[in-house]
Image 1 (cartoon, rainbow, N blue to C red):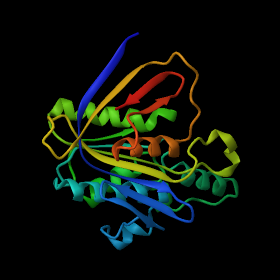
Image 2 (cartoon, one colour):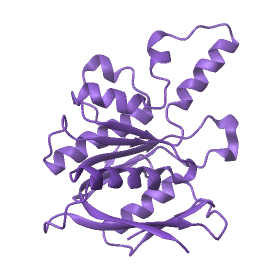
Image 3 (tube, rainbow, N blue to C red):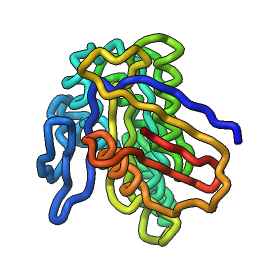
Image 4 (cartoon, rainbow, N blue to C red):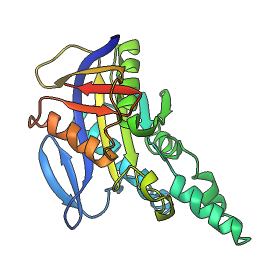
Length: 244
């Protein structure tokens, strides 16, 4: 069966995962407990308007770039999210049903690429930017897009994934589990002795979807990166992904 692979290195990474009483911020240096994403680098006016999904994405983007020592205003970037700002959109729809007009700020930040747009403003980044949504495979599809772009430009690319659960009315259609995020600076360059090498394969799926939530996919990728697993896999019923 046809298989496609892409190789490269991860210069730095960080993840936002649920914990017992709070959240866990994980990176190559270890794990810390965090109640809220650190967005102190943003202007105060911008911080007040952000959704949790955008806060997670932007905080991980800033943290990951700081650890990679790249200039954040020059890195092309790929932002990925299955649902994007849908909880905000849902709130707007509920308001319209009650004859309430949305505020300009809420309306302008209800689009799927909100986090990417805010990052370009905050980081003063005019580099190319891509926003990805690919159902259950959003995390892996987004990473593959970033890796492919890195290969094309022969340079580093910032990848950012973040998602939050849908409103409770959607029940088991959610498939997120909890607020979650992952970011990495990926590079097609050869191993330099400090970066983590990776191989990402994908092929047509021959089995049913694994049915795991996004939180489990991010946690699996983290376990691979810290050396506790040999691979991380995802099968959405259409494509089988394998990270090693």
